[in-house]
Image (cartoon, rainbow, N blue to C red; front, top):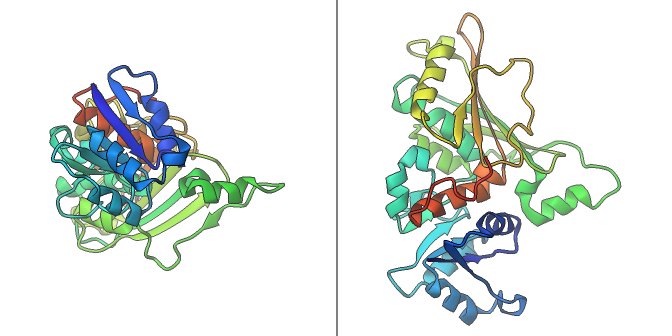
Length: 307
């Protein structure tokens, strides 16, 4: 029996994780009464009683929570940004870092939602030498507003009519950029242009490539084949080869923990768009944490996931 504590379990990510862990007899969820949620002594006890702690906290609070661990047994999955490029932490993307590595890790950082799509598309291609690591990559992306947590959900929903689509991070310093660069192994930080749409959940991550100007002029077919090889046998990541090039909806994977990858190219192979579709609360957050939890607990990787 694995004892699990979700610290910060009343936020959007924490609630979705708890829902995926419900009715699973192989897991025992440690919970605190509302009156104890911010009680340091109660949290310390829960953290140290747990086999695995999942942190759904702001960055500084996540670092503080780790400092409360007083044993060498409690393992951690941190869903904040705090440890995604930190020494001593494994990046919790099993398809990229290896399932065995996640299974044996003591400290796991849960990937960011946008970063999940970007890394899934580009890391296998850079590793295969099909696209260069020193290229100035651009990434456009749009998310459902639930990715902004309770504050943004209220901004979109607590008014008579839906708030319009918005772009943001115009200072070009989004918090996901360091992990996007580090875990693909890029020489330059990508130019990242995220947006929020007036839909609750869902995400599209889009990397346009001027392949005709790249060394070796990689074709769309070669890029698609490399991704298919990288994710062969995965029950979570799928490379879709037969999707219409007319359009792709942000809700493609909404409500699931799946990640769908697409390669669209011009007939002359001078331009390609690498596109990932996922749920910002699924493989982009809670589903990814549960996937890592399953591996760390020695359970089937997809247990409790919505595929």
